[in-house]
Image 1 (cartoon, one colour):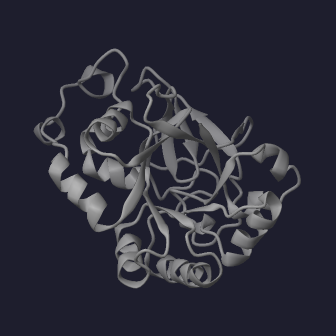
Image 2 (cartoon, one colour):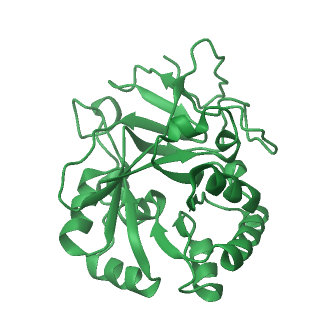
Length: 272
């Protein structure tokens, strides 16, 4: 089984990167923070370090960041056609389809697979499936439905998708049962929510030198009977690797605990 590891562009150039990679496929970029999107120089550095092309990862992209990603695609199309791209932005997917259809290997990231199955984004209290602290869910929460499988199959074919990614066992089994697409699974952290509030910089960071690096914050609150983990612009809970014959790639995110680091709080922050 193939193993992959996500590294931000700044991490790929630091000492010890090759030991951290340890033979795994490099995912270069970030799913949740546009500040960590790579340049072609980063791509070339990763290729020189490992001897093979990295997989490019996109986040959601505002217009300025989309322009930067388009510049990266232009270089890769000329110098590294066939590169795999994990797409988490529908605008980027549409751009690739219109301008580079068939040039790159397209993988749907877990943000898009969650978009198709919004029910599966909710990891509720381990004692209850009725919401935070066992409260009854609102009507709109309880009636969110999954995108019909026939539509998803047409979507995969329409955009030449070769692989999908998820950290949800239910989503994994849905694609394993109903499609022939390759499937990757993320562990040991499952996505709970995204945010633009950076716990390392405070507020919305207009400029960033990636102070979070590989660091992870553990957050406890009386509203949940399990801990949350904050990394970059996202919150996670622990999950376990899925066991299934269709699984051919696992993806991990390296991290280290950020003990003693001040957590920025705003009026909406959970306080334990």
